[in-house]
Length: 189
Image (tube, rainbow, N blue to C red; front, side):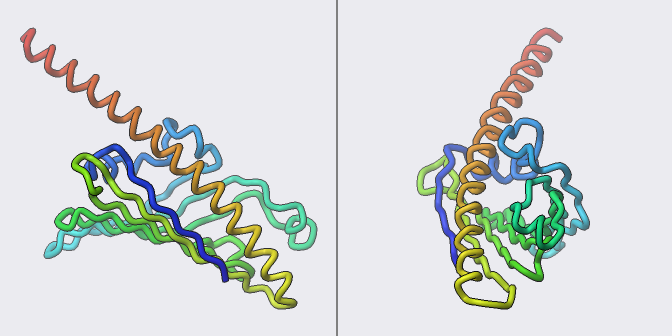
């Protein structure tokens, strides 16, 4: 079993981050070209707590390691199941994800939490993952698989954060331009 954790502070408000979380895999994110589909499976709003719960299936196209292709006939398409909770009262977004592809061999459980940062207009991003090789056999093989997987997870986490940073920047610019156009139209009317 291996663990990964990372904390980062975005220079964007919680409102911007929580709204743009749904755009994380849009064309603005040039670091997520491997994501080929995001399907919303269900969405519900708790009438008492106002917590929005969403289930999504994320489809990725990534080259599988050559060893897995050779021995397991692994495909380049993989699936991730994600459940997220947006709590507007607590200003907290929590996302939990689990790999579905190769899940009988490797379990990757990820948790992401967005909360208001220590300074106004900033958002704290906490990411953690637990990676467990489930394949039978020697512990040395399991350790090697887990070490490889956590290293790859770390690299992808950095790319994901950079890509989301770009989504936040483009979104801020686009919405500022739209607000300016609306203001100009209102002034001209």
